[in-house]
Length: 153
Image 1 (cartoon, rainbow, N blue to C red):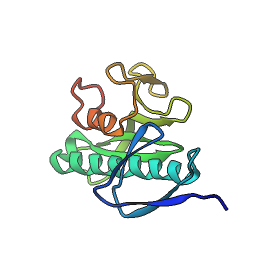
Image 2 (image 1 turned 45 degrees about the horizontal axis):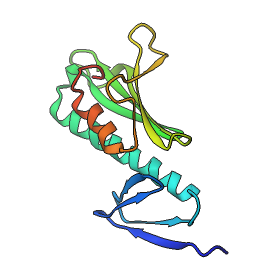
Image 3 (image 1 turned 135 degrees about the vertical axis):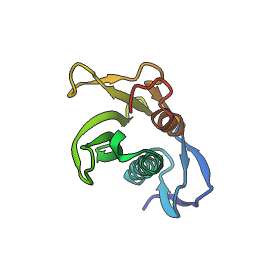
Image 4 (image 1 turned 180 degrees about the vertical axis):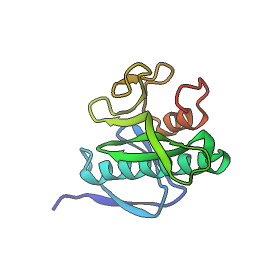
């Protein structure tokens, strides 16, 4: 058994762990081993990106008429993909979805990567030119939520 010490993260806790910020979004216990990142920390990062993606979609969908599309996301290994759901007029079910952004945790770079879909090929991802990577997940998610360059939504 290692001499690991559990850290308790509550809703307002902020820690810098191995060079990146971890913000507790819900009460949970994360076990950190002194000289490395454990699977618990990777799971925490996944939970954090999913929770923020859900909040972005909920916020966008509350203020957006259905005719303009609804935001959704799908979990992937080490990240999420955001989608825009397109609706036909007077329909309560979406007709099709299109991917708009991908957020991915790069283990080697120890940072979050942000991609946008290629307009010419909707199966190819391009690095988002204004903030392609950051150790700050909040900055990445804010860029998707606010979409200041009108490239995602």
